[in-house]
Length: 455
Image 1: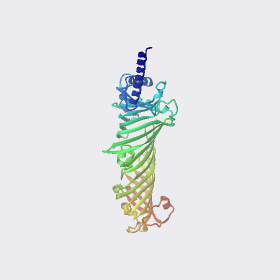
Image 2: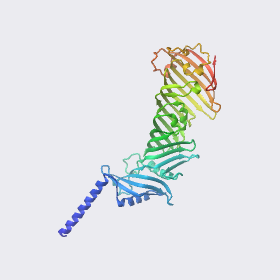
Image 3: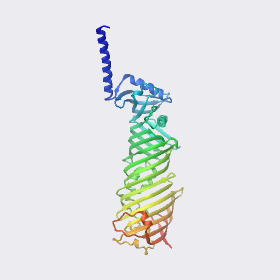
Image 4: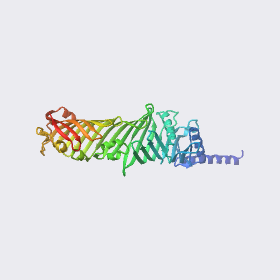
């Protein structure tokens, strides 16, 4: 081989090496279009899916040298059945693959990210779930979701295993709609983020929504877990300074809290079946200043300095337990617990409430106007007198007639504390001595009840 030929070959090899280095350097900085990548990805996707195929307009590639991950950015991605009917459309899809697996039979897809899709999940009148991505509105994207969930459910939770194919599925900046034709609720989240990952029990998720409801935006975030063996969901919902009326679009049962004109912060833990029926809800909620709007019921609206409420609801909200309800009012502190059992026509009620501060008759004037309370010193309306009292009610409420029928008991407790000491617990009241008490009966409408002292 002559010197000229050797020089030419050397130059070509050097040029090829430099070209490869330049390409690798370039794709490590930003995604670029490589002619052979689109066909390669189409072939890989065609071998992976069988009920439909994936097409896209353009593919770009980026390499992360330190993690040895290749990113493929697919524009205008479509899933179509073999009759060329569109099942789903996504503006942009990002797929991350371990670069070292490209020459292996199993390509190690570490994550798939759908960017800026329109996503809807609607429970129909018949209880079926309709899932759509893009412009479809007939649930035809359901088989796409099924494929994703199967991959996640069968992927090992341990990322160090060598045979996994998908360990994370993300949705970013989604225009998300969640609806329920049964309850009529509708939730719209214009910029929703959802992450799905495999777990030993099934599929876990982390989400954050800026939900649009009744002309306002509210932030909702949390976690979820779908247990593949039990076919049920655990859903944690976190929110911050949200009015209860706005939450009814997400969970209609929050209508029970609408008399509270406050901004609630806290969490709700939901247990649901595979059709998203709520079997149990555990809640822990707090609020700063607001109003308890009960003037039509008890004759007074109550100004609230702070509120804390914990409890749970079961059997699709037919069984509600309030373990702790603490109201810090202007002149009173109220600690209460309650049990509500609902059937078709009636609501069984059991309430125990404990009061510190000024006379309870100031809080409930309509209820105490006709009771014989002369022997109850803690009902005296003296400005500088600090009282400790409790009330219990056990009965039922007719949901159709809006009538209550219950027995009650009122007690004055012998507790010596300074006026500004509000650290008493319910146990302190239960264990304290009672100066005097009164039994009573209440019936009729809540806003104009008939109360009578019983002996």
